[in-house]
Length: 322
Image (tube, rainbow, N blue to C red; front, side, top):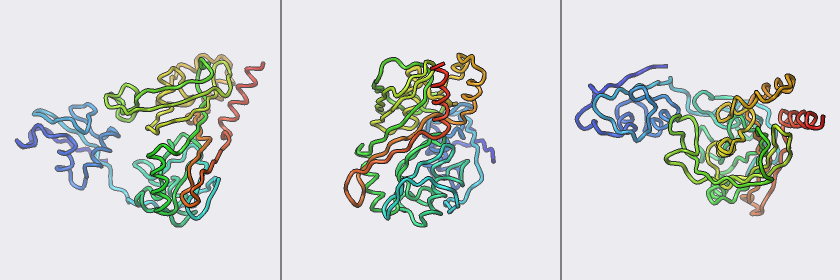
């Protein structure tokens, strides 16, 4: 990693008062404005020791610090990785992604991703997503398991993308959350955007949040925890995790939006140990429905709770009964 600093002594008269992203794109070799924006969002840029916004205006006396990572080969390669394939034809492939798998190559995760596995299995995917995201029309967080659809042809990619944009794709999740959720069902309507103090997180308190709607209903109660069915009407980054945490019911295992003190309420040592062994947020994409790009009829897919979440639910049930 290369550390670079740019101070105001290098500013020209024209650059004083310029936007940060424009200044960096013009003055850092081989870095585009979109790459600059991503670097800022990932916390790789500091202005006067603080995390900035891409639109921050530079002024005399500012010191910019950049963490420049060595360049990587900007092309995903095929890798033989097992896939849980739910459905496949000449147009699409639906997989049940396991928790811990990143969807596509990105800084810090350039291989062993879903894209790498799909390239090996399919040999050909839609090229619209580019060399790093072929076939990808939507994403799941690394720690979230469940259903995803990828496009094999450009026509399928365009058709599926249009459905996502028009909110015609239906997605249902199951979330194991902390607390005994009040009520049997509910609706959360809160904007979601970049956290004002931590660019790596999302928040309902963002100054530039976008409208987000989450519907939930109770599947099972365990007293200290609740299994929820969750439908999202919008697809904002980390939407479910942010919305549920805002309501005081963070997803179990969520190290970003969770409440670490919640586990202190558990007095059973064995149970506490099992909860701590959960190595990801207990969130699963259990249902996926869309109109097939060739048959032009709606298709439905489901995926049962993965073993780690199902085992916890069984253990919680035992503790509830006893």
